[in-house]
Every structure is written in structure tokens, then in C-alpha cells.
Length: 152
Image (tube, rainbow, N blue to C red; front, side, top):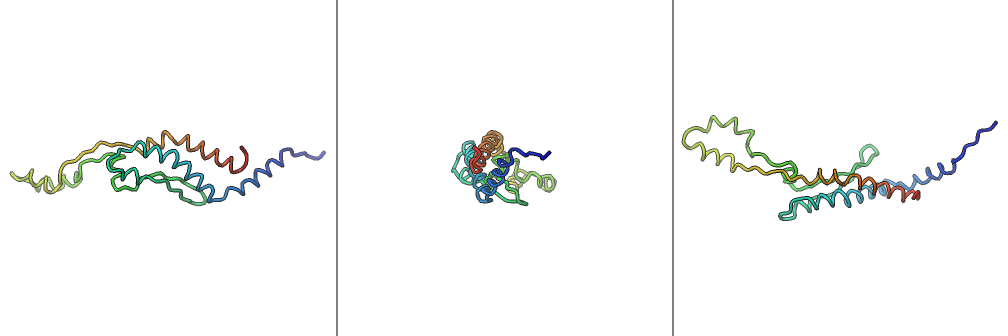
């Protein structure tokens, strides 16, 4: 009794459709989905002073071992300080030199050596953007790939 395979033509059509998934197209799909969702939300959430931080938020897609990874980040120098907060500058070095600063000029020397004691609270914008929009980005990627394969 010969075996009958059903649905083979659908599988073959799906496999032929995979040829349409050229690396550049996949890269563009990832970049578009992440920039329209996570990047846009990060730009909406970021604190606005001069606008440099918002302008520095970008989406990059990298290929590693044949797999793609989309990364949304900010290239401004101070982005990590805004995202995670900023402690006291010079704090790690203060304990080493505290004993060297003695006498009535201690406060003046301390201020001169370590600068003003600045603390800033964190104002995260990248992590909350990712957390709130990653589902939307995945849905957009799925929809675009299905369209590319002609399955939807």
C-alpha cells in the first residue's frame, strides 16, 4: 500500500517563499519595526533639554553568526547617566585621599579636588520604551515577514 503525502505542495511553496527572505530585506524589516516602535517611544520618553539626547537615539541592526540583532541605543556621552542616574563624581577616590585632606582648609581642598557634589536622579527612557513596545515590534516583524512570504 503506497503512502500518500498531503500538503506537500504547501510546504514546497513555503520553502520557495523563504528565498524571498534576503538578508537585506530582513535587516530592513527589523530596523523599521524597532525604529517605529521602541526608538519612537524612547524619543517620546527622554527628558528634553537641548534635544541632543533625543537626536542621538538610533536603531542599529547587526549580524552575528548568521542571526540578526536589532539594538536601540543613544550615542550621547551622558545617555547612561540619564538612564541610570549619576552618583557623586570622585566618590571612589575620596576614601583614598580623605586622610590627606586635614586641617582648616579641608573643605576648600575637597571642593577644589572633587568639584561640586552632584547627584542626579535617574530618568530611564530606553528600558521603559523597550518594555512597553517590544510586543508591538514583534507583531510588526511577524506581519512584515508573512507579507514578504505571501502568506497573509
